[in-house]
Image (cartoon, rainbow, N blue to C red; front, top):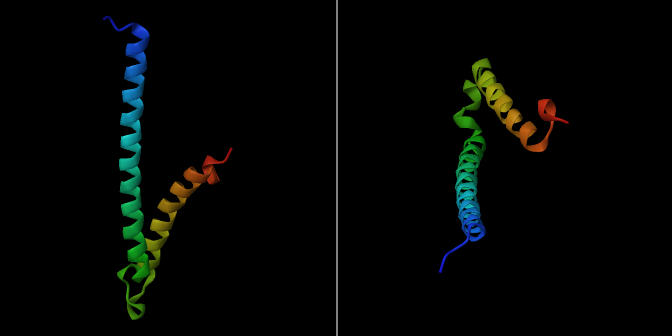
Length: 83
């Protein structure tokens, strides 16, 4: 029995979609792990002791915040990513 082109195309498309789904789930897990690590670090005040806080710590948090803002702006279509 010969499989026609349409069946082959449909099978290839199905396998491609399954591969995309698996890759998506893997990337989501990677992001979830990074978010969890960041949350733990934030909960611990970014390993800073109150009596040792200086402007360098503020600059570090400003840098982190600017990177996260780029991500949230992209994810929510805000800032430079707004329509």
